[in-house]
Length: 451
Length: 148
Image 1 (cartoon, chains in turn yellow, purple):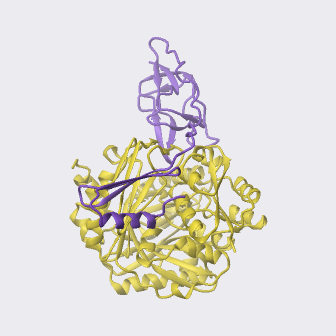
Image 2 (cartoon, each protein chain N blue to C red):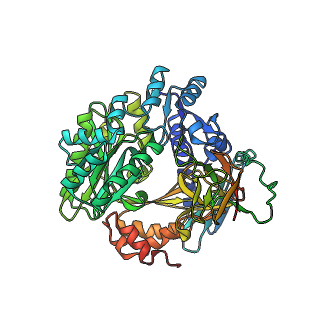
Image 3 (cartoon, rainbow over the protein chains, first blue to last red):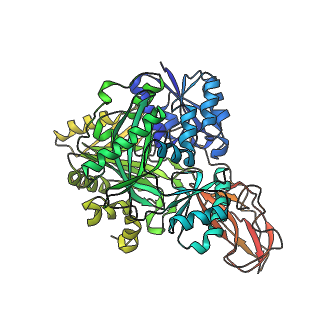
């Protein structure tokens, strides 16, 4: 039974986790950097502990400081949120050694899915289709793969994630230099220079399946479409995935659950697929062993509190019977409001928010750590708020989204709100089921035009 | 106390059945403003009194840079963390005496997890390096000085 929980994260997800703690009667202790001590999460938590200076490497990425803070505050458990150390075996092991529950899967499962190459092998072994490709330790090995599967090819860092550490190779003649650059960048960014190559499927959709497991039983809690991306960063997510053949949807859920069962997965996890809807084919991309940014759309259509379910399985409980065979109700869409100036090529816009007006009302949920006076420090990611709408069907959700975004005003920093509004005016997006190449096309084609 | 989403929904429900267009609720712990907006929906503005905001790590003395006539200051395109080398342990992009073109990268500034290279901005020779590797810099900070 978890009574006092350390939250090793910041921003909106810290606020989100605190909300569940409060509902469940769990005391929340926030581990915050010096730059975040006056931020909203620090004021909402029952207690806040400073774990280091502003730069993440000295605070949110410092497993030793986090476990020490949890021990000193006599916490039973650590919730790592997403990003930072959410999938860190080092943090999980340090917590275990200190007798503290790490809210996440087992260390072996983290090792299995955290290493993309190994995850690919495990998925293939569990019978999931994987994108043709393989690991390359040298330019020569890469050249062999290029010869075998042909360009275009995506070069991915084994240690990468969240869209970072990827390079597109379109010309076989550039294999050598691209691989060398990708390895150097991967080494610099992730401390792991290994890369692997995958056939680039340009017209695929990004559909993911939410899983929860108790180490024994694994169930799929529905799917999300995250195809609206810019430079591999998700901008809009929806549940359920629109305009998807029901037979294909069922196969995706079954494949994800099969992978979870093969791992005897315990915790909340997401299996990401690249879906070629036209051909009715799909490929395993990766598994994320943590709560995702876009989890609220699943919560909206299932009525679940995924953080609460995550805490329950971390306590060693079995899945609640209610989690089996959940059918989504209605349609939900999430818009990520980022401190990126969509009028200036998405240039980051750190600073102080002087005014923050968010929409409110039936079917509208806003997950944020921002209000008037909040700082958006340059040290961390640019997520300002997630605006989630839920209605009986997709057209109603889109209409609600237009009203919700019209009522949203952020001043003091630049954001991508205009981009979201323009997106909602686009016919192709409104029809639903676009692929991951859509957004770049839309934005180049005048999406950027002032309204 | 703090307001939950459900609390706000409930208050909106009450307001919907009332003739009022705006509600301001202020307690010692929070300030909430609900407004019926033109588009027919409701908007919500929250404020939770904060302890005085912690300033960002002090950007080291910047005003005191006196430029010699004929030299050019190089400033970052954005505030962020300044790096002199492409990765830890690698050789810096430039040193004192390096010859640079306007588009030569003299460093990187990391802002909100995005890396932006810092161009020299002019052709010349680097004559002074004022910002340290890993230092937090504001946009008006002089990173380096070059002599055309």
